[in-house]
Image 1 (cartoon, one colour):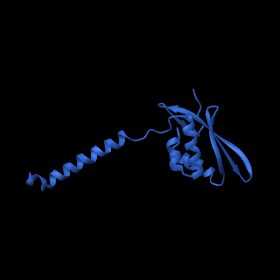
Image 2 (tube, rainbow, N blue to C red):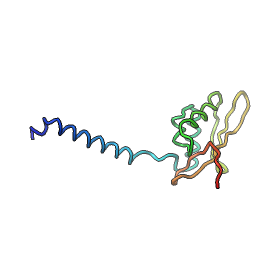
Image 3 (cartoon, rainbow, N blue to C red):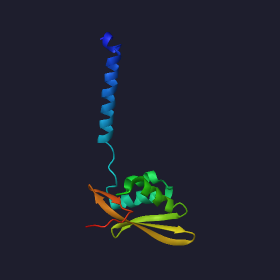
Length: 125
């Protein structure tokens, strides 16, 4: 047993097996994109836009990834986000910019049983 514990090949193999096991566990427990309900989605989108954090917004998007999340958050950089709600099949973010109140609508989609927003309008067909 002492001989095995001092063998470098043994430790390299233990490290490799441990590394692969860790990767499989992380993949298995990786959170699914989106939220479980549209109201939770509206709250998370609103919080991400208030914090100007595209990393929080990115996993809530149906398409686009980091670039779309960055440009969406950048749109709200100088705006004050007041609230976000789910209504009529979309997350509606109410905000004010330079004294003008407005709404930003993000259509909601269901992907694999989870709700996500689609800031990029794509034709269905």
